[in-house]
Image (cartoon, rainbow, N blue to C red):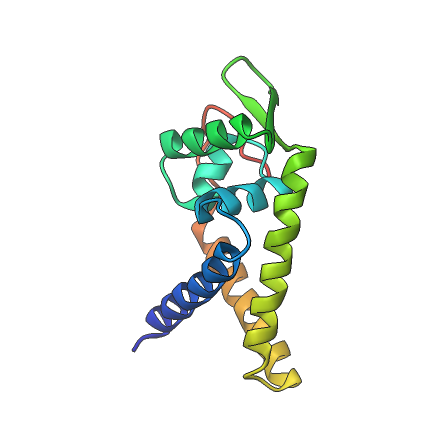
Length: 149
């Protein structure tokens, strides 16, 4: 198995554990929870949300529509008429607390299989890979709305 396949397999396993844990606590679809987490951590445009979640812009728009209908997210005026700025609503914060708790639980599960020094080394290596891949991708092409996060 290649390194890329191992990382992808681990990602799927972690995502499954996280989805199962959250499924016990909320009826909200996992993608909506991921969208909330992204918005809570600085994603401010639907274009950036689509990129972060690896979905097409219409799918991101539908996610935001549902989150807004449920009172979890606000759309605010953006830098121009075509853009909106996304903000987490107070009600969305309660859902984020569930996500944060589930992430800490999964983190504990992962750390249970590693010594402290191994976990620190894995974090360092993953950050190094992420930095290298991000740097090699170059600048993001300009779009209609800012995707600053």
